[in-house]
Length: 314
Image 1 (tube, rainbow, N blue to C red):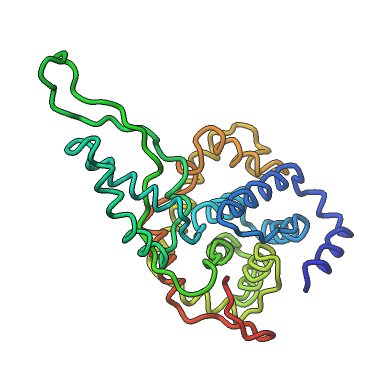
Image 2 (image 1 turned 45 degrees about the vertical axis):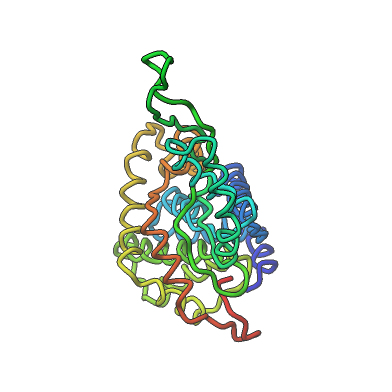
């Protein structure tokens, strides 16, 4: 079913009034902002996504939990190609390490390393989350100089963002794996939370395929989903599913209003948490897990679209 056809059907569905349109609009705007930072211009259709969330909610998965998973995946699994300014970030990090020893001469050493680092970065990708919202200042400890006050033990140096572990790049644009991770986690949650509802494994998988389609803004066929799903069957994914649930439960329980858990304003729970603590302390962020999932996704056999034969997951 195309996004346009799905939207037409949803516009006639009386159940769509149960969607918190303000909250969903905020969530999609937040996703689009995160995607924009890594040059991902794929737009999500709010009616399409809202319909998939309602379908999954009706079989037992809390909408706020699923929204939490989607937002967390979108923020954590953003890859981008390296940029010229990233080289300056790395040179700044090296300069920071050299400052306590070389001081003003540290800049000369880092400039000498510049060409080699620029060449290395041409074949690297970055996890965007590791290059955002990091401290900008550091105190450089030094030995007191002759004639200075006894409490003169260092100085404040201005820093740029710290570098992340480098991920070897393949040809083409960085893969957009957040929708696939979210879909696989959703499948796990559906299978766990449907309770006594009689649903076959294929039917449960259909929900996940439809959710990924909505997040990718294109129709995903089952075979494409199965290939991506198979490539991500690693312990790190199991850990991520568990940590999404365990980190979700404490802060959702802090809200005393019953509507936060089940009502139409469920996205506001995550929004409040993001405003108060930021994404790094809201989602179950753990760099080794993210890096591993990015690597296994990037090194797996490409899932091909039947219609075009082009590599999927991009």
